[in-house]
Length: 401
Image 1: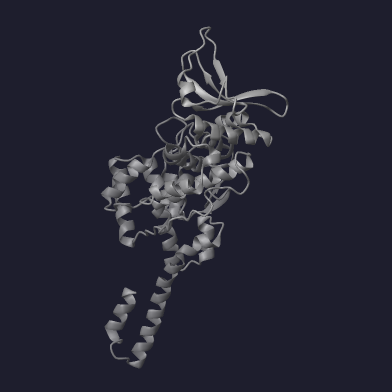
Image 2 (image 1 turned 30 degrees about the horizontal axis):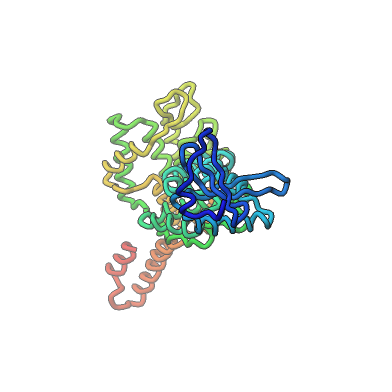
């Protein structure tokens, strides 16, 4: 038939035999339209592949795209075919290409489940399911651009810690996508997206606060308002500087005289030296037959799963709102610094593998040093009779320091 125009297309009728009607443009070979028995039409191109097969590739709907627009698109498609491309196969491959949600599922199954600890795996899953999938989940992995990542990161600017954690998970996802052949090399869209500044939370218990916490734990123990295992866990956290997971996963077989031999921790297997007070706490914790864990829960044979709810009750009674369980670890380090322990020694007690991790407590070392310097200078001031620094005033400042 002659060149396809709106008039000729408007006059098309479905075939009476119930088969598709194909009409080809005489003015542009291999370009035509398909009309189904239901009257739905689409533009298409017909071509042969490199292996001799014949394909028909539909690309636009009649009534939405004009014949001239469709002809221009067909010209581009046929030019691609002449260059050896296969538009129909490429579209099929694109439809089968994984989405971001599918990439996230593969990340969790093939990487996180094999290489990460349960606590880390939970954080990965949380980032994927709560923050990544709702925004990027339906996008094809190959289509995600830096602007998409930057927009997601920006949307969480009010919670910078979570925004940065999500960005880290995305970066790992797309690094694996490259390794798995789902994206071209060096196309990670997270590269170049700056993280938000994070203020390190440093909360250290004072002597008075330690006393209030201790008194509250003793009261809970006498009343029975909290289990002996909850009370024991918090005391161990305060007296050892251990991480929460290390205490909750502690088994009796790991307890040695003067030490805890942990087969696994955030930094791998390690020995945690403990003092007499911590040993006394361990001796006071009830052992349950058939349960290997030191800190047990309600389920037979299992450890305590949730300590956050009792911790919130305890800190409220002690007048310590907002105090995190992890702050007990920081406070242990603070007490060690105040006691004159060196940073390398503190790093060994806390199980740090990198000196920089312990260095965050370096500024605390100024306090005992300043107190010593103040005492020495006051002695000299007394001897020299320096105005304003003698007698009780000098000693008062030393005591304050």
